[in-house]
Length: 420
Ligand code: NAD
Picture (tube, protein in one colour):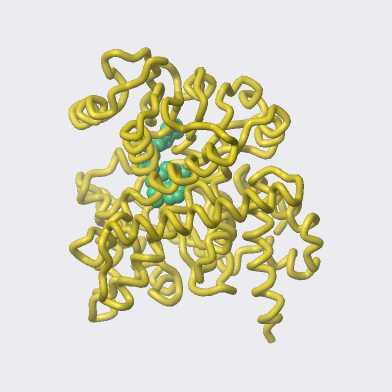
């Protein structure tokens, strides 16, 4: 892939730099390395929808499959004003390494629509989702590519996608998406899965570092699906949640926030902003407030060369995808900060999505306790594998996780060969 193209984006440059670095370490076959640098297929679509005022607006949507060497592709759908073909391609690539690292029979994919979902009515969001689904219909299917929620999308979005796809097939196809409402084939524990997985990863990291997690001070950027669940679970476990944020702003109190009261405030005010008993800070300043653990759980590239030096946390748990630039990563590494990389730390979501997909294909559903204990087992095993690899190779956790993820995909390419 050339660096100057429609695919160009900071996040894709990061993803390619990471792949190149790991390919060198693994002494990857150069032909396979070259194939891994390119998405298998990418589709750009126009999505015309009738707005509430009767006028038509046209949005741009993307779906990218990075590779399908280990199975059908899997990845979230993002509604965000900044989304681009390059960003979606980078996220699809990261999904490949994540699924491979977690031992799931999937390749990586990602989708996005360039829009601000907060400015759309429910009716407009439904029209957008249904038309986007219709436009990418040849790209998705239960044994082809299975979308899931990501930033700006949720269970309702997945229900509309599943319904639209099912209408074109003349039958209900629950396995075409994951992260659906439970009533139409969703899985118990899926909504909480990413946040819960972060907590399991944090327990493993603290244990491996010989530290106690309880009582430690935590800052979380982003209080959406991922951030709010992580906050609630860590707070329940006796951690001090000192700061949180959303797109409108951030709040910080070194003595901790009452998460139950914060949830009630958000239900009323629609934002963390204005929560009594905490100081208002900017999203940028939140990252450098005093804390032991920092969980970026919003957008990409927020930890970079200009702020990594000032981050106080000794553990960074990457809830978001690609929140750290390569320059930021190097600084954190040199300062001895333990970074639990995105492809490991936030993999709980895709693991339980896999459970949901399997349940949907078999029409046989598991109890939440089974899902939670299987998630814990998969997360713990993956963490320990990555920790052991990092110790053996003398690398940071990200390099070790990527080495494991990339190696399995490359092995798949090798045994399958090159068609024709
Ligand atoms: P979400 O839409 O539920 O929440 C996103 C949060 O980030 C919200 O609080 C939002 O206000 C905030 N935010 C949005 N733009 C921001 C900005 N410019 N600055 C600061 N905050 C901003 O999304 P989510 O599902 O919680 O996803 C959050 C991150 O986690 C994303 O990077 C996503 O790719 C990643 N992730 C999500 C899942 C999942 O299962 N949902 C799985 C793995 C990774």
